Image (cartoon, rainbow, N blue to C red):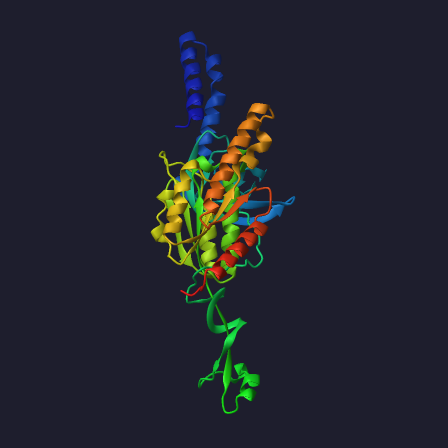
Length: 432
């Protein structure tokens, strides 16, 4: 029995007992309004076998006042008897901010038709899923009610914000035997001239070198171009809580996630094979792939990752490098800790080509630090220690980007890849 109806019954019972003890009938008359009130509530309460409700959920991404938002609409269809009262209660995703509408509503007198609940929340990176809608129906006074959880499944992935990168000057040390955009230093189909060789039966006549043929009567020569192949790229994202910092609602980790999404899209757009590994409480892996399907897999993974701690000290040296091909160019996105320095000699000893994108934690938190001499001196010492650590990594022939997250990343990546390209050309061939 509902607490309201129980209270009503107890009030009537109390008045009845008081009237008997006092032998005064007028006291009993005071209890009749409560009795009538409860009787009407019981009479108007819908029979369970006459209740037939179905729910449907719709999601839509749009903009409100220039802000990206998600609109949620829950529609409840009444296909049974008239319902004096119905309440729809939804559970918005945890941590989101509702900016329009409400996650609950109540209406009266529904016979057939439908009732809709609408609300909107600001887009926030993540993967959100709903399974059901909470519906409560009862009498018009709210004395009695029943709860139903109607199936209304829906899900949405809000991808991290990312920049659109123009063509990256990638020159991997080794390439895959698959068409791509990286010059492979081998003859084949491409755009850059490679050389001339004697004509072979079956060669296209459009590639004949007529000038050389004219100088050597009786012989034909075919022009060859530098073959373009795909590179194998592994993205490593540091999701450890000890490397994450917060300034208000801004997180250093969110900048790393956005950088990983931008790099993945840029590399995949150029036809390369890309994989992702996330180091946090557990190791999350997106296996290598190509094209838009692979981009969707990576973005979906990045939508759900959170910085987390495993309760024990984890360094980059715990990474299972065997998960990457020995041909892979590894791009590590990490602010680094002191214990991570030992990882990079191991990386170079294994023969990997690598680039480190390291968001600068000290420039990130600088606006929130006290301006007293002690704090500024501590910041100077910490920044100098970080600079020494990055220089030691750079001496291992690893591309290093000391990234202040307030600055665009693309020019820094382009310059670093260009430098690695020059090192690769000095180092010899790029074939597999």
